[in-house]
Image (cartoon, rainbow, N blue to C red; front, side):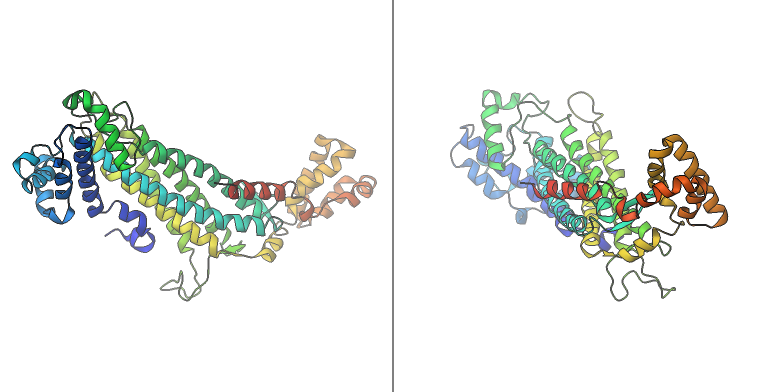
Amino acid sequence: MDLLSRLGGDEALTAVFAERRLIEDWLLVEARLAEALEAAGVIATGTGSRIAAACRYEAIDVERLWTESANVGYPIFPLVKQICAALPAEDAAHVHYGATTQDIMDSALALQLRDAAARLNELLAEFGDALAELTEAHAETVMPGRTHAQQAVPTTFGAKCAVFLDELTRHRTRLARARKSVSVVSLFGAGGTSAALGSAAPAVRAELARRLDLADPPVPWHVSRDRVAELTQTAALIAATCVRFGREIIDLSRTEIAEVAEADGVYRGASSTMPQKANPISSELAVGFGVMAEVNAQAVLRALEVGHERAAGEWQVEWQAVPAALIATAGSLRSVAAIASGLRVFPERMRQNLNADGGRLMSEAYMISLAGKLGRDKAHEVVYAAVRTSREQGLPLREAVKSAAGEAIWSVVEPRLPEPEDYIGAAPQACAAAVEAWRSRT
């Protein structure tokens, strides 16, 4: 049992790679191949439709298929034998005609990947739409910005969300490109030369592509797995964004920070021993799924290391790793979409945390204010010394800077010293730009 998927997997994407769907897609490709052969005049009229009618999942002995496949090493030869057994000899003679096992499996894979990418795009849209709302609503919600895990300068929660949203906008473009790239038919025969179909090969392949609603590439791709890898690597990039978002929520919801929290609910995230706990369970699922997506996508890269005209073990990596990577990405996306849509944001706590370090996150702002009188380097020295004094003596930074700068300088710059909400720079504009870019999608 896959415990991770049971707790938070995406059923729609998992179904794309279900056993029945896989076998049905193989049968669909065999059926459409027979029809394409008939349409191109390679086999007699009526033969293609009779073969197609025999390509039914209900007619397949699935247990026998897997038993025989384990002996053969691949599933298509045993599948073809069962199709042929249901047909008259004259029709059976033209089942799988001109194709090789990988043609059938790769064309079926293209159908699966096309649907999987479409589902990922739906989940990406759900996450992005929720993030856009957060970005817009909190464009001016001031909070501590953190670099190297320490308070740095003021920012806004919307600006934090905008960075994620901007990534999603780019991911959406990548995903559309990868989906288009991988939606290609394969019908190139044993060694990629289409010799078995002779001069009819281009017409048959084009007709098969049309019937499957796939593109018709002129060059074989049995050993060129870059299209498959492109989609899984795109999924891994998306998953990495989800992991980063999940970890951000985990950190911001820590008791000591408490600036956000996942949706509330009776026993949601509850501990069996500590009644006070409300663990960030969706964020944890996002991380778990995302890491699995990244690991499996990395394995898919090894499938590109194929020699000659057909793989000798590398292709098999895809059978496990490709579905696993995409299913895990969907689980991670589903988790972060739920987080973003139900996230509780605590602006007052964010404001309190602005002063958690004695207001020292305003040190850059004070330095810039002093620079007009002292120059940047001297202003840096003054504020640096003030920060040390502030820490050692437990003083607010403002008082320490006043003492370090001297009354003459201080009296000039004090009226111009900003509050945290005055020192968020272009954060609101970045929020607006990120939201506009996301919502302008076609």
